[in-house]
Image (cartoon, rainbow, N blue to C red; front, side):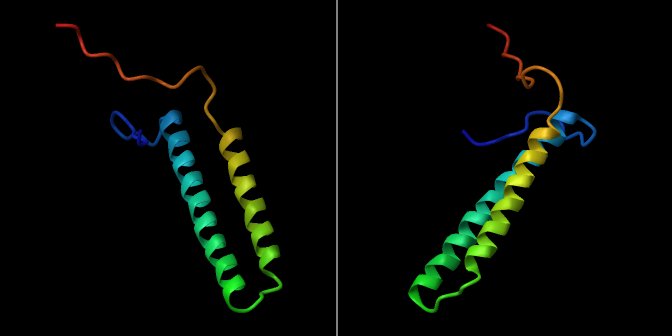
Length: 89
Protein backbone atom coordinates (compact mmCIF):
# COMPACT_ATOMS: atom_id res chain seq x y z
CA UNK A 1 0.00 0.00 0.00
CA UNK A 2 1.56 3.31 -1.01
CA UNK A 3 1.97 6.12 1.47
CA UNK A 4 -0.73 8.73 0.90
CA UNK A 5 -2.00 11.78 2.67
CA UNK A 6 -5.77 12.03 2.66
CA UNK A 7 -7.22 15.46 2.99
CA UNK A 8 -5.93 18.97 2.38
CA UNK A 9 -2.23 19.64 2.92
CA UNK A 10 -1.93 21.87 6.00
CA UNK A 11 1.70 22.57 7.01
CA UNK A 12 0.54 23.70 10.46
CA UNK A 13 -1.02 20.29 11.21
CA UNK A 14 1.38 18.32 13.46
CA UNK A 15 0.36 14.99 11.91
CA UNK A 16 1.04 16.33 8.43
CA UNK A 17 4.46 17.64 9.52
CA UNK A 18 5.30 14.27 11.07
CA UNK A 19 4.24 12.56 7.85
CA UNK A 20 6.55 14.88 5.89
CA UNK A 21 9.44 14.02 8.23
CA UNK A 22 8.79 10.28 7.72
CA UNK A 23 8.81 10.73 3.94
CA UNK A 24 12.09 12.67 4.16
CA UNK A 25 13.61 9.95 6.36
CA UNK A 26 12.53 7.32 3.84
CA UNK A 27 14.16 9.26 1.00
CA UNK A 28 17.32 9.64 3.10
CA UNK A 29 17.45 5.90 3.78
CA UNK A 30 16.85 5.03 0.12
CA UNK A 31 19.62 7.41 -1.00
CA UNK A 32 21.96 5.95 1.62
CA UNK A 33 21.30 2.42 0.43
CA UNK A 34 21.62 3.22 -3.26
CA UNK A 35 24.78 5.34 -3.05
CA UNK A 36 26.59 3.14 -0.54
CA UNK A 37 25.83 -0.10 -2.33
CA UNK A 38 27.03 1.47 -5.57
CA UNK A 39 30.23 2.77 -4.00
CA UNK A 40 31.02 -0.57 -2.38
CA UNK A 41 30.34 -2.36 -5.67
CA UNK A 42 32.66 -0.04 -7.59
CA UNK A 43 35.32 -0.47 -4.91
CA UNK A 44 35.18 -4.24 -5.21
CA UNK A 45 35.28 -4.12 -9.00
CA UNK A 46 38.03 -1.56 -9.52
CA UNK A 47 40.21 0.12 -6.97
CA UNK A 48 40.14 -0.04 -3.16
CA UNK A 49 39.14 3.15 -1.41
CA UNK A 50 40.44 3.03 2.18
CA UNK A 51 38.12 5.74 3.48
CA UNK A 52 34.88 4.24 2.22
CA UNK A 53 34.17 2.53 5.54
CA UNK A 54 34.44 5.89 7.34
CA UNK A 55 32.07 7.51 4.85
CA UNK A 56 29.57 4.69 5.31
CA UNK A 57 29.79 4.84 9.11
CA UNK A 58 29.43 8.61 9.16
CA UNK A 59 26.45 8.57 6.85
CA UNK A 60 24.87 5.74 8.84
CA UNK A 61 25.31 7.79 12.02
CA UNK A 62 23.63 10.75 10.32
CA UNK A 63 20.80 8.48 9.20
CA UNK A 64 20.33 7.16 12.74
CA UNK A 65 20.34 10.73 14.08
CA UNK A 66 17.73 11.67 11.49
CA UNK A 67 15.59 8.72 12.57
CA UNK A 68 15.86 9.65 16.23
CA UNK A 69 14.81 13.24 15.44
CA UNK A 70 11.76 11.93 13.57
CA UNK A 71 10.80 9.76 16.55
CA UNK A 72 11.46 12.54 19.06
CA UNK A 73 9.34 15.07 17.15
CA UNK A 74 6.35 12.81 16.59
CA UNK A 75 3.09 14.46 17.63
CA UNK A 76 1.66 13.62 21.02
CA UNK A 77 -1.60 11.75 20.98
CA UNK A 78 -3.11 8.46 20.16
CA UNK A 79 -3.37 6.71 16.87
CA UNK A 80 -3.21 8.65 13.62
CA UNK A 81 -6.48 9.89 12.20
CA UNK A 82 -8.31 7.52 9.95
CA UNK A 83 -10.47 8.30 6.98
CA UNK A 84 -14.16 8.09 7.70
CA UNK A 85 -15.99 5.11 6.33
CA UNK A 86 -18.43 5.81 3.50
CA UNK A 87 -22.06 5.81 4.55
CA UNK A 88 -23.89 2.53 4.15
CA UNK A 89 -26.45 2.50 1.31
